[in-house]
Length: 323
Image (cartoon, rainbow, N blue to C red; front, side, top):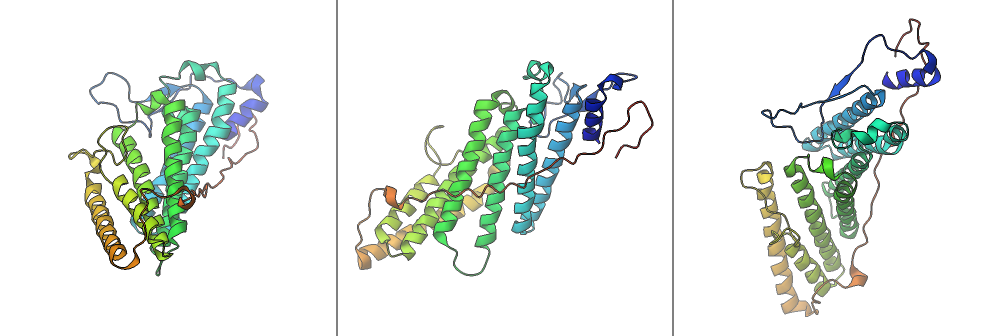
């Protein structure tokens, strides 16, 4: 409907007049909820039709991601992957088509940079397209792992490395293109993303190790699994290698049992491999994985293209049916 009104205004600017002031009010679905005791309004007002269109599309995108979360919890990973790919496509359309058009034709857009909602910023939408692209690929990996039989370890490792690269790109885009809005997002969400980057890199090395061991390259396999185990440790400094510390009272505490279980599994497997190598194979263990054995990340770019349906313009000034 909003797009139809925009088209009508574009083709009939001489009669595009309002009888009274029209204001659109939204609150962000990406930014952290404001303190209820704060004096600042929890919502943002704008008279721009493009603002209404952008927020409606962003809300639609987030609703698709919620459906994806439900599918993931139910174990329907293929459907979750499709939903996240659809969400990525919506944010990509916002960041590439809708918002740049608004930027080019509005002085107000730049003037309200600090106060505007995250959903109306090009950099934020481009970043979230990367995030949901990564989530769609995660669901593709989950689909492979739940199938019976032994997976292609090398392929799964490359896909995990690609997920980590997309998540890294998401954080980098927020920091470089939308630092103001990044600061207003839930800190636990950003911690979870950083956490996920490191877990995906660790799991990528783990699957590389499994692939090398299956290929009888025992020494390099041990080196890969050892690197994966180190990557799963808690980091000792904010810029150090490893997983960020989880607040014992925070929402991410529920991840701790699974992470500890993965650490125990990796440690046990590493000890078993080291024992077998010392008693049977006697293969030299390098200090790190050689460059010629490292995995090359695969990014499936699982994004479902979104096309905003175009309706015929309305005849302004006359009664007309709005679709």
